[in-house]
Length: 296
Image 1 (cartoon, one colour):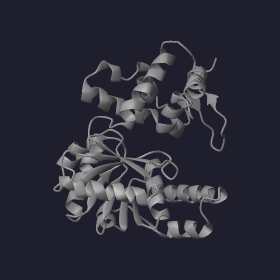
Image 2: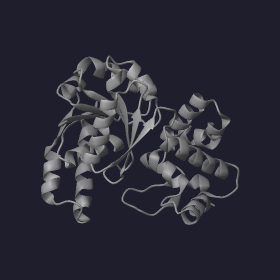
Image 3: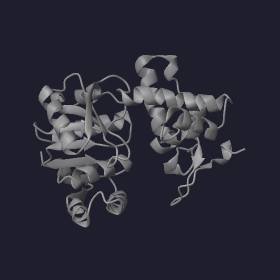
């Protein structure tokens, strides 16, 4: 397995491309817009520079990694010779199903098709392809070059050999893969998202403020980041989408998204990427400042 295609050049996509390229794989990075690809390469370059400053890699590794990445706007061309395709497009069911229908037409019968989805059913994604046994979930954590976990999600039809290949590949990337079965939210988000949602409810009901909630969880539960800051980092729109998958999948009221979260996403306050969420964000600044809505 040498040729990897990554679909989507956003935060997750460029992180996945960076990780594969750094470990010697040839990567085709695909997006619909040239400017998005240019930003992705700029981000990858900056992240490699940070690794050099920390002593994690040297200049030779950076040069090799960047040389391993080729960018494309044409999906069919980008996946022609792929051994593995990793989809990291937006967390939208219809977008993913459409992509996997195309991949089923464009890719060889032995190509493994992986999705980085954080909640959408791998079984459903596989059902629109000609080779459902070759479809698997490969859920990386953000930031991809740093975080060790890969949730490897087996769809109902995923074969043992494909699962074994992806588990071994993850180890080759210096990750720690964990095999899980295909149920709403898998493991990570089935546990994480209700916690984040409860933190939003705690704020919504006036129990405590943003900083107080995050401080309790950091100092009392030894979390490196409070749940509201983490929600901003993930993207409030992504959190809402995952909660809706859990709510619709299980039909349990405990997964119902907090009205405050719904309103914030509707208003376009989606966290770090919009510069406004529970906190507000200034490029280049590491200081956390409460959004005006939550400032006292």
